[in-house]
Length: 190
Image 1 (cartoon, rainbow, N blue to C red):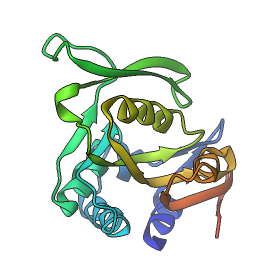
Image 2 (cartoon, rainbow, N blue to C red):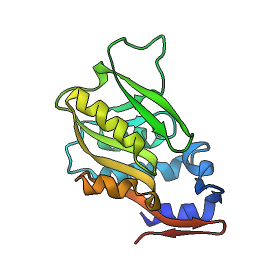
Image 3 (cartoon, rainbow, N blue to C red):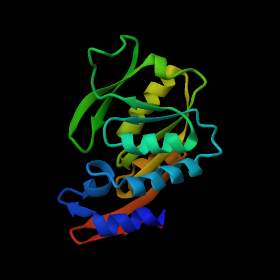
């Protein structure tokens, strides 16, 4: 999606530590019209996959997952980063190491939202080393659900997570693949 690359170049900013700041349109302030088109594109890419549910981990992936699920006409499932008092006691969990936040958390989703036979699309704003996707894979495996693929807004290709997943036969469709970044430039993989 050329539009995602253009949006990164015009609205993104590279911060120290290979951090790409896109909070002004993707995950803090939302450019809803643009993200609606992103959701439609993610749905188009997986229209042939028989998706029955879209899944993401709170919080930054929620908007994209919701808009993609809407375009596909299926439910969006949001995995929480911690247990809460109003949550079912019957849950699937996975421990995930966050590359961005430099910590670990326990991802939690109620068993009632994932079923054997579900065909699930993972949607997220970023893919770096792939830890979040690995955690969601574990949860889907416990549920007996099938992972049909991953739709990613921005892949940091230089960190290798997407390539490792693809090498395992997992379909990963990224709308922008960042090959390298510096203080004044972003280079995309072609």
